[in-house]
Amino acid sequence: MTAPEGTELRVDGPADLGWLDEIHTAFARLWGRAPGVAALDRTRFETAVIEVATNIARHGRTADGSPVHAGLLMRVLPDALEAEFADTGVPARVDLDPAPVDDLALGGRGIALVQRAVDTLSLSYRDGHNIWWLVRRRVG
Image (cartoon, rainbow, N blue to C red):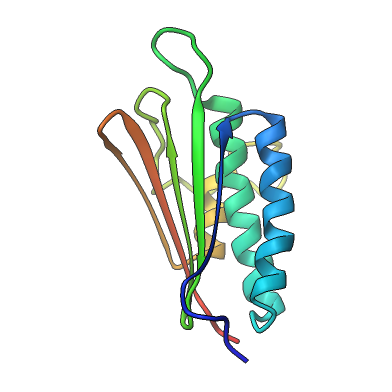
């Protein structure tokens, strides 16, 4: 069973703990609308999305000190799961080709984790927004 073409959800708000909670809630709604998505795809996609969202909430900053506003659009397509983040923070300085991290390290593993969970991860800065793009090809 495949998800209906164009199944999508948006979560917008200040990039804070409340926004992260809303994303968790949105996943429950998304999977309810797309019950045919395999458990492995759900788990890896959700892990990657939550990791990027947490990074935005924890590390996002604006030049004037105002709160960072962020939006997330998640899509379930017949062959892929997609997430697009846009946030109002200053340009994010993230190395998308990180050096290997020690398995016992307490931090610094987030981007590597995301890259293992999805097939595409990109970051750009357009029109005053950091744009994160994640794609996981569906295996199930």
